[in-house]
Length: 159
Image (tube, rainbow, N blue to C red; front, side, top):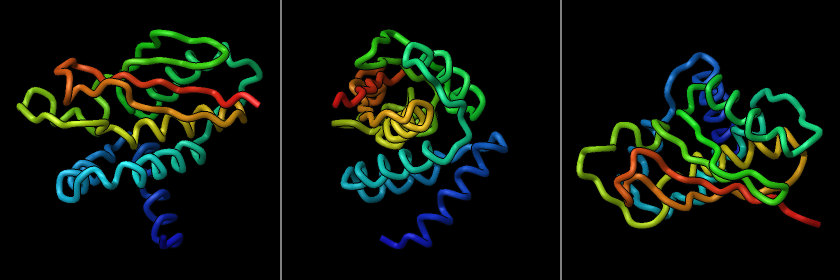
């Protein structure tokens, strides 16, 4: 992997987020053109971006839901609804995020997870907030279910 190119992409994506601009078109175009072998790459990109955004350090995982809501709103990443939160995991619904917002209600259906970038971004943000390694996964995609949101689960690594 070309670390210099990756670094330039992440800097540009961070600037777009901080300026309230969108970043999803690049991902959607590549996924539609190249297929789902890019899921791991987009998860990685999202995770790396999440770990370089400015966040407040949290002392208690109970504060993750509110902190996530604030960051998702601050960076215009969509609308979030936390559906479950515990010391082991956080589940949420994300509406209007960059990977799917222009594809909803257009008859486009996918198989498997489509929003790996957002999953990685959520994991990166939470890791940055808590210094706890975690993994995020899309458990239900709008482009499969027809729902106006995608559902994600963030699971914390236990030692």
